[in-house]
Image (cartoon, rainbow over all chains, first blue to last red; front, side, top):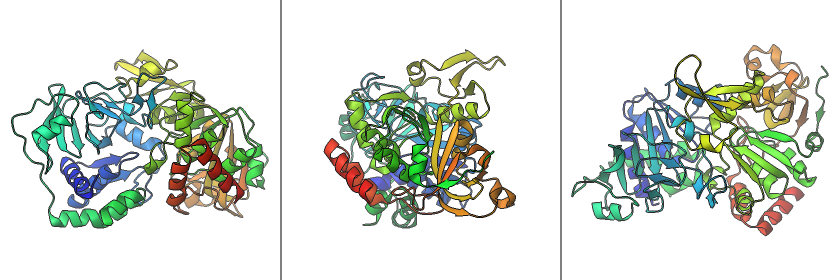
Amino acid sequence: MNRCTAITMIATIARLLEGLRHVAIGASSPIPAAGALLARERSAGRMVVSILGSERQNPFTDGGRELFDCAAQGRIDAFFLSGVQIDARANVNLLGLGAPPRLQKRFLGNFGAPYLASLVPHLILFRTDHGPRSLVEKVDFISAPGADGRWLVTDKALLRRRAGRLQLESVHAGETLASVQSATGFPLDAADTAPTTPTPDEATIALIRGPISVSVGEIYPAFETLMRE
Amino acid sequence: MDEPALCAAEALAARIPDGASIVLAPDYSGCALAVVQALLRRPARHLRLIGCPQLGLQGDLLVGAGCVDRVETAAFALGEFGLAPAFDRFYRENRIEVVESTCPAIHAGLQAAEKGLPFMPLAGVLGSGLVALRTDWKVIDDPFGAGPILLVPAIRPDVALFHAPLADTRGNVWIGVRRELMVMAHAAKRTLVSVEETVDGDLLREERAAAGTIPALYVEEVAHVPGGARPNGLFTCYSPNFETIARYASAARTEAGFASFLGEWLDR
């Protein structure tokens, strides 16, 4: 993914998080981490962001379980999930392709997704390579079940589940309804035109490429390199 | 109880018998990689690893060297470098048993063990395909009337193995806010710890340190192994060596690459 697309995803995520109190970031999530740190910058210090694996962005003192205990109590407003497959109903598959328990291809595993899916009100899905193999009609395995209202941010577009299915909200600069549809493995019930996702201004871009990428670089050095070089 | 004596990484590894179940910390917590090196040199066999809640570099090294029969984990990954390459090969070749889980189910299973309970109820998870995969899990009606709820069995590992910044000569181990290490020590039958630094005195008598300290009561043995988490990082001490981990991530994709990385790493 190129830097420009990553920045659009980060700015879009920051918009979705506006007004929330506590945003938690899980494993393998550099772009959501950057989006949450941008939203926190704009919240005048009201937002708490916790990043798994970080020493500096970590408000927890009770070990690995605390994030999950917090979620079950309703103390976490937003969390992010990606997956090897995301389907038309916004179900997420993090486990792999084929039929478990002997998968054809195993990916990283379920992490906290099966649990957090039903306990965090703003569960935001993301995928950095929007394509017909990652966005499918039906996932091979449901790690996390979908729900109406759920957002999906990809490198091509912003989608949201309404009436049981993911619908197109906006396409990123350089994409069209047709180009996004052809990269999506299920039909999008969109209008004839889709609005363009707002692009961030120069100040926002500088913030992302500067202090935010340094913060995220504590645990995601490749992300920092992509942003800064 | 006898106070744990301080000994080296090899002696700690010698206390882990073949066939043991071992709970391991995630890469961003405290990983006893020097002890893992000693297990690889032996090499240990038929280990059963439990990720608390996920496995990473240390698990992948053990799997790649043929030390492991079974893993129970919420994920198996090398952080930003993605798939754990040796585990991926072993999985494809059907050479390892995997018990799929999710992070809070592992934390809850260990919490059940630390309380001496047979199981723990857990919120969420219903609606995930994981419930059907885990035939040892039960869904019951909440006896207090709030609908269905998941029960997960206690996880009682033979050994908890991890690396921490500091211990005192009595065997009290400071882990700060990394309290998953505390839960691991409480839940396991035996706890083995390597540390960066040892100090005289008694951490439990220092008010600021005591709450973040695992009492020696739970700790069988402490080994003084400076740099014992490398190439991973260690909280409050040092950052991961991402170059080494990247080199491993690419080398270990093949059996030969893994063997050559391992040979070089064990020689140092």
